[in-house]
Amino acid sequence: MAQVDRVSFPVVSASPTARALYAVRPTDVADFLAGLPTAQSGFLTDSGFAGKAGELVLLPGPQGVAAAVIGLGDDRSHAAFGDLAHRLPEGDWALESGDFEPENAVLGYCLGAYRFDRFRPARRTAARLVLPEGCEAAVAMAGSLCLARDLINLPANLLGPAELADAAEALAARYSAKFSRLSGEELAAPYPTVLAVGRGSAREPVVTVMHWRGSAATDESPLVSLCGKGVVFDSGGYDIKPSSGMLRMKKDMGGAASMIALADILMQLDLPIRLALRLGCVENSVSGHAMRPLDVITTRKGLTVEVGNTDAEGRLVLCDLLAEASEEHPAVLIDAATLTGAARVALGPDLPGLFCNDAQWAADLLAAGEKTHDPMWQLPLWDGYDRWLESPVADLCNVSSKPMAGAVTAALFLRNFVGPGVQWAHMDTYAWNDSSRPARPEGGEAPGVRAFVADIKRRFGMNVISDQGGNNTP
Image (cartoon, rainbow, N blue to C red):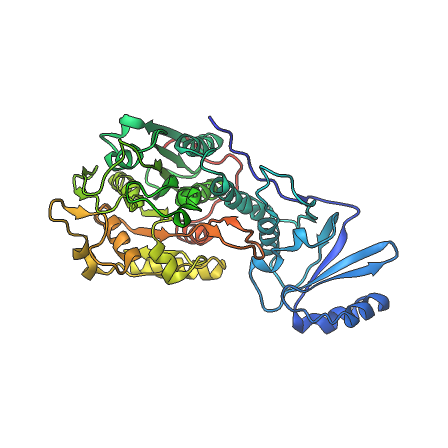
C-alpha cells in the first residue's frame, strides 16, 4: 500500500528567539505607530506604511531586523497572511494580537507555506510561525487540504488508480475505519460504468468504499455520504483531447482528492455522524479494450446509457457510486468532480459550481462558503434541459444533444442516479491554481471543502478534535 505522507508546516509551539510580527489595519496605523519606539516609528512612517493589504515592512533593530509589520487592509480572510512564510526572513516569528482571527492567520500562513517540492528541493527555507494558543485545528485543516494538493500535483505515472486507492486506504487506516476495494473485472456487477471507463487502460480501475462513525455516533446518527471522481489521467478516450486539453489532466482526480480532504477533516473533528466515502479510481485511455462512441452500458441502477462521447467519462464514474450511496439513505449526499469545461467558462478557475436539489441546503452551503471565504456559486438543475439527454437506443445519453449548458446537463445526468428523497449536492471544481497568489500556490487545490465542513458542523453538531477519533463501525 502506498504511503500517504502528512504535510508538515513551518510552525513551532514556542521559541525564545522569535521576532514580533504585527498585523495592522489602515484605521489602526496611527495608534500602532504611537506605541513603537521612536526610531521604528519614524522608519515605518518614512516607509509610507499605510496598512494596505499585502504591505510588509521589516523594522530595524540593533542586530538587523527586529520585527515585521504587515498590512491587512480590509481583508478578513486567511489569504491576508497567505504569503508570509516565503516573504519573511528565515527564523521564528511570533504573531502579536490584533484585529484579526488567529485561526484564520494560521490557516493562511500554512496554506501559503505549502510547496510541492517532492522532485526538487525548496528554493529557500520558509520562516517559522510560533503557533498561537488554540490554533491547532487550523494546522490540521491546512494539513488535510494540502494532502489533497499533494495528490492532485502528483504526475499520473506515479499516481495511478491503485495508488489513489492506496491513499484512501491509508486514510481509513489512520482512523480505524472499515475499508474495501474492488478492481478490474470485480467491478462488472456492482460498478459497471466505472469498469467501462477504466477498461481502456492497462492499469485496472478500482472502487474504494470507506465507512466510519464518530465516537459519539450511534446507529441512528446522520449518515454523510461522499463520492469523488478519481480519473488519474484523462486522454478523452476515442474522442481524444487535443494536446492542449490533455496538459493538466493529471488533475482530473481532483474531485476524489477533495473528498479525501473533506473526509479527513470530518474524522479529525470526530463529529457525531456516520461517514461514507466512495471513490472511482480510473484512467481514461485509448486501446482495443476502451469504450467506444455509441456503446451502450447498463448501470448499477438498471438504467441504460449510450456513450455519446468518451470524453464525458466523469459522470459515468460517478453514477454507479451515487446509486450505491443512495441505497444507504444518507442524510446528505455530496459528490465532487472536475466534471465540465463549461463550468469553468461560466465561473472561471476559482469558483466551483454548486448544484443542489434542496433550496434551503443550497442557501446554507453558499452562506458557509461566504463565511469561510471559500465560495461556491450555484447553477440550476434546470428541468427543461432533461430532454437533451434523451437517446434513441437507451434510457439516457451521457452527453447533451445541444452545445449549451454543459455543466447543467452533466449535473442533470447525475441526478438520475440519486435516490428519491436524498438531499444531494454536486460540486463541479477546477481543482487547480493557474498561478500563485497568497495562500494559493500554483498547482493542485481543493476549493469548496471548507464550506462543506462549516455546513456539516453547523448542521450535525461538532464534538472535539481527535487525532484518531471514531471507530470502524459503519
